[in-house]
Length: 313
Image 1 (cartoon, one colour):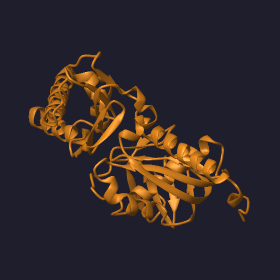
Image 2 (cartoon, rainbow, N blue to C red):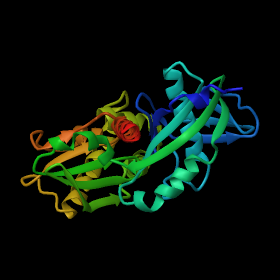
Image 3 (spheres, rainbow, N blue to C red):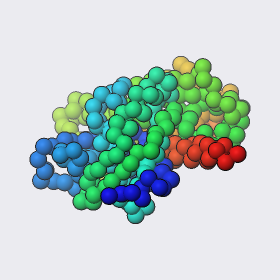
Image 4 (cartoon, helix red, strand yellow):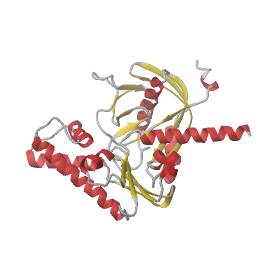
């Protein structure tokens, strides 16, 4: 039915599987998956696969050290692929996935995660009322954080500390004169979700009420929201304390702002900007939440071009 697909070069689609949000080079959507055996009433963002209905984005996924433990991240991968194909005006394609894992986990989990993503060579599903047919040609699994800057490492002069703050984890890596230091990379369970938990508890303790996560996230992302000043103050205080915790953990890994530069990225970078105290001459904040996915795509494309060039010669 789809003979032409095998004749085409695969499309590289990058997916940054975050605990809070899933990112591609063009999209960011909440990493929530709710499975239903029957078609749900509310289906704004729904994927139908293998006889089940999946509503996407209602809630964040829980932190899990092993992303292959269930089908949630596979479903999110299909959604990411669908979004990127629709961006290109396609519903049928051969796809090569470019993904990643936390710095200190990638070497041990790469093979299992790759097998998980490629569990089916051909897959058919429906997303937002459109039928898709996808053949997976392969997958690359890179290291988070460093992938976002891998193609521009030459710009990192002197000693640099890269800090990638996600929803579930914070990845830390030293880059000395454009060279990543493999012996000085760390992954900590200190993502923005930990800050969200503290904020919810403090709001409940202080005011006896709950605040929607979307509102809290807006404050963390922009520094403000259309809410009462006392709630805004409470959230801001908690966020400031969380940012202090980030800096404390960086110092535990020998961060010294007078001796090195700090490069902050990931979804939590906006919190450093909004609630932190820093020298903009010594600290760079990359607020592009899709930066890691763009890095995955760039590396995968570079590797593919090298392989093609090698085959020609």
